Length: 330
Image 1 (spheres, rainbow, N blue to C red):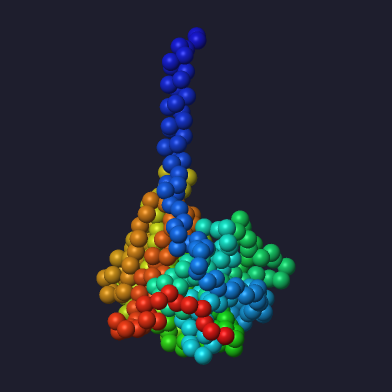
Image 2 (image 1 turned 180 degrees about the horizontal axis):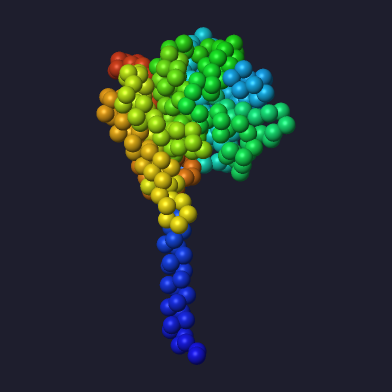
């Protein structure tokens, strides 16, 4: 029997709507990079140096770590600079990526909204025969990222504190005060950043966390952090969390739900635990997925908040303070 054209059209539209509802609409389409994430006329550009390599990691034998160093135009070797480290570094510094942290630092340093800081973009460890991560392939397939970033122990903090920091101090005048050191990342890079600060608050006290993997990924127990925060002595950390309501929500085959694999739920648990223990914590919940669109859109806001209390002059005659932060004199 032939169906009327109306019913054929209705069936096609219904099927389309059902498929869209099952997949969910693209909730990331409303997030875009703002002007603080793009190059701006008249803003002096910092220099990205590298790649450099930390060879033969003692924390993860057989692996090496590639990193790049952002040196702002305002860096003066005579004055200690603050420090910001980004995990999954190549994704944060890519000029055409979703994050473009070097542009954010250029713009905010120029307007004195964050202090002069050295930025470091470090990739997860890899063996010499493994490829370097790229913008289109920087997950857990080709490197030591799953072990390094998702383990709740002191091995990755050792990479940052015992292997990376000494190399940086040899080349740059970086502040020795932990309150002047921040570390951040996305997804597994976010929980890795938190682990560095949690294990080594004597070196890092600012954490930037985007779509953080505070879940029981591969049985590594990242979802234990909220309980550890509530049970442990308070540490001098400042934490900014970001996630989206459409992040991975712990749904498995045949409608099975795993609370310990619900990214958004576990991020909210992190915020509640940190708040309950009196931490300096902020958070922003969007409607995005497990992606970088919303993180990229709010990165400038997160950086401003984390570094909001850097020194400021209130002298009304301080013409230097009231001016843009010009490049350092050679």
